[in-house]
Image (cartoon, rainbow, N blue to C red; front, side):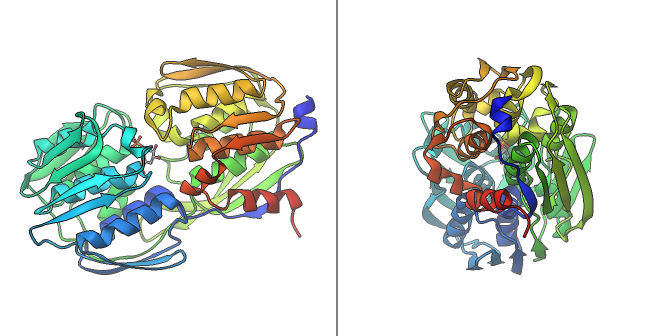
Length: 427
Ligand code: S3P
């Protein structure tokens, strides 16, 4: 196919910024611990800076030198109004902080950029209200969100949507609640909060889809954050698509609740190998991921697998445009309420490049393979769509211009630099 014949190979070894989900949690949970925690390899994502910038208002001390961060807690327990906390575009910051503020005798307003002000928050407000916190939301669902925290009681809550952010908010509130707080998840979601809480001495019990936590004092910790597999996925996809590619991403997190993308790529015929490297102090496995170009075939992804690959689904759409057969993704309606409506955004952008993509209410269908022409892709201000269309540009016949390119810095500011180095190849 011409698109692929014109693609240049990616070759060599690289690393990616620290995991975004783990960085947010390490900083927030460190702010709840008594003493100074050191976090090495903190993510360079703009979203994670937003988390560091709001913690001082709650009484934590934050010092940062590049990717080396020290957070000293515990957050202030005095009764007062802490004012407005600007979470910028970071949904994880807002939802996890909601759980923290709910358990503090303070009031706060959580707000952010226009993009974040469109995102659903009733999903965290509802269980935290049931625990005893007071929440006011603009129009009942979206931020700004005013929270009056205080005395909480434990609840048992079955997640109506498979969301690690909602689960984490409830567990963080549970650290300050009377009795046991349990979250039941029918479908597994990323478990970084549970792992880190246990490593920092919290009373956490995980079994059969039920995560229980009791009120706990946390010990500070010295943690290293592994590389972000969700960022590595873009490099991996670029290598899988470009003939002659052979790339190793080192020191990347391989927590099984995050590796759905590698499983799906392997199912599609991708040549992926994972070499485990160890486990961090925060109980996160990491390793080296190697990927070589190979012809791809279509696959299907269903509801049970979606949370394990949620942020990488736009990339699966791109891979599917170059795969033989029909790829179908279902059970992924959550994509419509991410930083953008990702189903609409990926379908419109890839169709504009010549791909055969059909948007569904809860997913999409891609008929492949189709060569990709160049053109302009509107990433809708969404970092994951910016990065996906950037990778599409590696395999398209003509240049691909991506709108709102600066938004890639919300998760992976060094994407272009990393790709350039791999296009130059090993020295
Ligand atoms: C995240 C969980 C996911 C994911 C987001 C980060 C987290 O969101 O899409 O990028 O760090 O917990 P949901 O929990 O809303 O599915």
